[in-house]
Length: 316
Ligand code: NAD
Image (cartoon, rainbow, N blue to C red; front, side, top):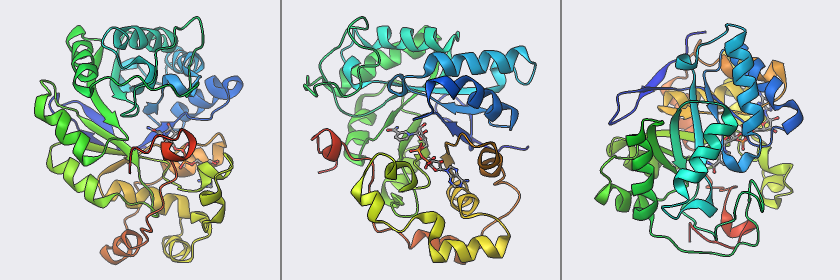
């Protein structure tokens, strides 16, 4: 399968446009799911301390390498700094734990997961700490960013970036960054196309990774009423028409719309049929009119908002 890529700045490294999400993949199945995803052609794995399964992702990677399916160099591994490790002395600790859990010598991309700093939780107390008791412990982003830059200098991280940052926060980081953020990782699907932010970030040389590409699908199971009340994208009429026209599924049309907009995608599924289907997005092209139709579906409906589940309104 020919996977296309985006070039990261300032490093010049290539990031695959297609990746595999590992959030909510249960620990007992993760190693196998990751191995199967690599077998199916995925080369980017989107991981995080917070997902609680980095040890098992590492096992899947090891199996794939040992079976001769890929080399480490052919994979692109992303992970994320959790909210409880924003102090400069905690950044290298958290990173070292992720690296050890994944069983790797280096990580391709390390992101600040949220622009939210929570009180430090030692590993032996709880790992991953999740949102815990939500006690905030503000740390200026420039402190965390400087520690992220040190990870690049150590040679153990190839590129760094940010997730869930607004344009204003991005401007802040860009004002002092010695190593510029290479990637902005944000929620993007037809109900939340984030077009202004994407355009802005791209104009500043960042590449975009969109998460929760299937919108409500991922949040229905979390009990989100917004997700439950929305028309599932898989049943949305305009998307279904476009899918039928191309003899593809709605999932493939959504992913194609994103990659055609130069947004990298990281769909998650544990079902081998869907995993294969989600990877088959480079064999067809949407017309300009179809792209416009999907661009016009923006409501906007944000499903991953810490205002709702952590009472921290970062988008207010
Ligand atoms: P997703 O949009 O990938 O959707 C997953 C849901 O869609 C699952 O219920 C799955 O069964 C279903 N699905 C997948 N393929 C399908 C297909 N072809 N047909 C029908 N149903 C299908 O959801 P996600 O997991 O929220 O997002 C993907 C990844 O993005 C995550 O796994 C994670 O790695 C990353 N992420 C990052 C952040 C962040 O804050 N940075 C937040 C959320 C997710």
